[in-house]
Image 1: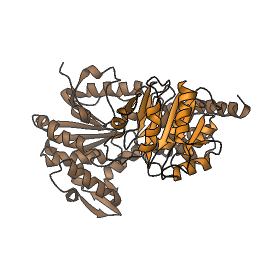
Image 2 (image 1 turned 180 degrees about the vertical axis):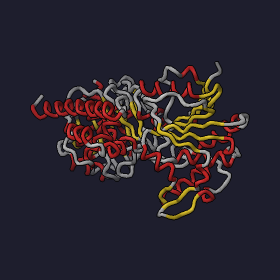
Image 3 (image 1 turned 90 degrees about the vertical axis):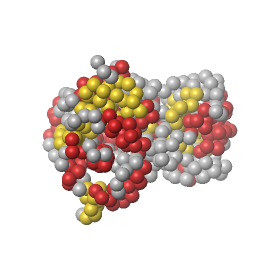
Image 4 (image 1 turned 120 degrees about the vertical axis):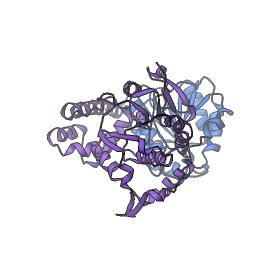
Amino acid sequence: MSGAPPRIVVIGASAGAIQALSVILPELPADFPVPIIIVVHVPTDRSNILAPLFETRCRMTVREAEDKEQALPGVIYFAPPDYHLLVESDATLSLSTDEPVLYSRPSIDVLFESAADSFGDAVSAVILTGASADGARGLKAICEAGGVAMIEEPETAQADTMPLAAAAACPEARILTLEAIADYLMKDIAA
Amino acid sequence: MDAALRDAGLSDVIEDIEIRLLLEALNLRYHYDFRNYAQASIRRRLKQARQRLGMPTFSALQEALLHDKAMLPQLLGYLTVQVSEMFRDPSYFRAIREKVVPVLRTYPSLRIWIAGCSGGEELYSLVILFREEGLEERTIFYATDISQEALETASRGIYALDRIKGFTENHRLSGGKSSLSDYYTTGYGGAVFDKSLRDRVVFSDHSLVTDAVFAEMQLISCRNVLIYFNRELQNRAIGLFRDSLVRGGFLGLGSKENLRFSAHADGFANFVRDEKIYQRREG
């Protein structure tokens, strides 16, 4: 695949996210060499279930992102409910309460666009299942900056709207099954 | 690296230079200093501003800003826009009510600072809470922001009707002792909050970036403002808060903000840890 060695992996998912992420994240080793930053659309009632849920299933450390925290290798960060999550060029994380994008806060577009701006071609990005068009613009920005773009196979995704929108916006992205995405992360990044 | 990729990299570099120059221009010309704001957010807001103002590049926006004064309020509108709710995070306001208010009762007079008051949602939440707790009469509320537009919105106290349902639910969950509808009438296509809520409020233009300490406060509430600053600027603001608080005074931050990365963390103790309410240490 094209692109520089990734310094960061970003993932966006919505409806069906937990099942899809459960195929990928538990595969990854505790010493995965770059941080993984994830936006999942969740209700805005501020309760955070994602980090505790995946903490028990993953070998990597799993956390909810805190403002101005340094993103570290071997750690998975989830965006907190009702905040946008952005990544700075020094790999610190910033939160924002800017208006929702496509009715979503956190927004996948916001995370992905910040990753493209901050890391250029050193980003690997994944769009998973979801029933919204969020992530398409962001994935396009990643492609334009020369990063690696991957999309979950729409036919097997629990909800295909998000993969289809992303594929339309970013035709050069690779369409892969969940297993193949996990495989890529293991072989091309962790190896 | 092929030519297209090299171009993509180059245009990013140019854009970064343009953004830095634009922020310098804004500071040199108008003394609004956004240079130490968290980069990713400010870049995103500037891109939105550039698009909506119809400017092809940040350099064009800079030229317009330097030569046309009318551009300033427009740009500031994009850079300072904040979206909040009344009683956002009801558990924070419940903690203020149940844990902080009992301490505040011991003071004969109170000064409260809502720093970065934006459109006033948090201000009115606190005034209503203090009225419910019988503390309003002895309190002066200082509501500050760098944006004149935000201060005007806050001092009007009119909110779209479709937001009131959420505000009402938040207020109830915060342990509200009255009905939110006691405080507004509907008209002008919105909910108009009672002007008596502003009897004890002083609105003021104040920048956490460039201005100095405020009078001795018993409580400073500054929620989801620091997330827009880089660490250096966060540090300045938190130092300012420490120096503006009486000993034993309280600082309330947003639920995802913390003092961990600040050089002034030692000046504060956790008071309600989960709600990010801190107390200034004695001495």
